[in-house]
Image 1 (cartoon, one colour):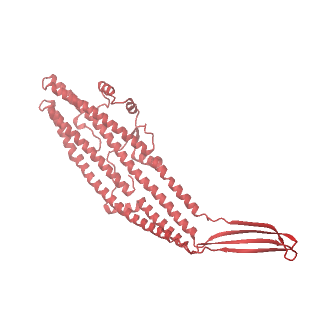
Image 2 (cartoon, helix red, strand yellow):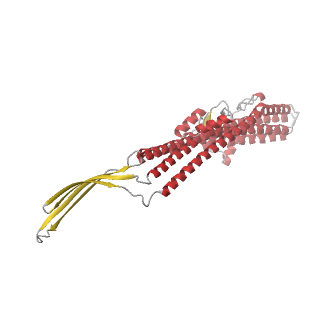
Amino acid sequence: MFAGRLLWKGLGIAPVSAGFSASFLAWLFSWGILLPASLAGAAEAPVQITLEQALSEAMDRNPTLSVERREIDIAKGTRRQAGIYPFNPEIEAEGGAGRARDRVEADERRGINTQSVGISQTIWLKGQRGLRVRGAEAGVLRAQSLVQDAERQVVSDTLKTYSDLLVSQERVNLAREILGVVRQVQDAAQTLFEGDAVPQLDVFRSEVEVRKAENRLVVEERTLAVAQRELALLIGRAVEQPLRAVAPSPVLAQPQGDMDALRNEAFARRPDLNAARAAVQAGQAEVDLVQAERFLPELKVGLKYEAARDFDAVGQSGLLTLSIPLPLFNRRDGDLDRAQAEVARHEAQVELARRRIEKETSTAVQQVSASRQIVDRYVESILPQQERNFRLLREAYAIGEIRITDVFVGQREFIGDREAYLEAVGALNAATAELYRALNARP
């Protein structure tokens, strides 16, 4: 069984160092292919990280989530304001002074003045405050659901990136092991050439294969560095620090359950569906608010005190004022049509979300099942058979029964199957991450 570690124990090969020969390094530097920065990064010991640690750090320190979570605070501020009565009492004061002429004694002028002070308050009549609070609470629920939906996407991205790092590590291991094998083939060719069993062309060909294997190792290490930086960015770590994924196998654990059970789990857990439902609640509260405010939504009640001096008379009075808006021209018909249309749109989005969840779950389950079968075939039959065939080819060449070109053909087939296996593992992990995203779950 090949549980993700590409070992060559069956071939009897000792572990090979990842270092390059001095001449090969000098050639890379001379052409500018290998930069000193890459060597400095390689010299730094990678930090080991498990999948659980990566997911936990992504939830705590992912930059995207830090931005999205501010939406909850904004919605809570709107909810708080909705619970505050919007109309403050109004105080009015008036005063006036002047002189007047008596009609009887036309030449006599006397001063007159008036003063008044009053207070008034606008009062809601249709429970608008409660309707506004209801809509704002639905807005908070929607914001929380949208943040959870962003977390769902971050979990999926972390799973995919962690899987890419695992596969990249296995590709580097494969490249190093291939380099060890071709060097041993080179040694065998040199030994056979010195014994006049093969032509010198075999030695030259083996040297070319060694250079190809060294190039392969450089490419795979570069790809590994990219995967390390991608994961560091997702989990909020410094990208300069290399990471090493630690897992018993490069294959992620898959969710268990049949199609119906997984679909029902997705319906119960998906935050985007909850966000769509919360939008319907907020829209319905808006409809109720508009309907409440169409006819006599409020009135203004006031108390007023007046004092007036007219010639020799002084008058005082207290007044009760009442102001009621008459809905003669503006009955908010357009606002009602808009609010009802918004509710209909949000209800359609709920149904769309349900259909999308059903499609995503079904597709992910099928992809996981198909990819799992491919990986199992490689592990159970293809890789063991290919390993046996390649071992026999190497043994036959070592005793001079076949040509070195036959060994190289078998080597390319062996490498191709190993790479195809890792590609199948990557496809399986990608499908697994999509299934976790569809279910809003994690391993």
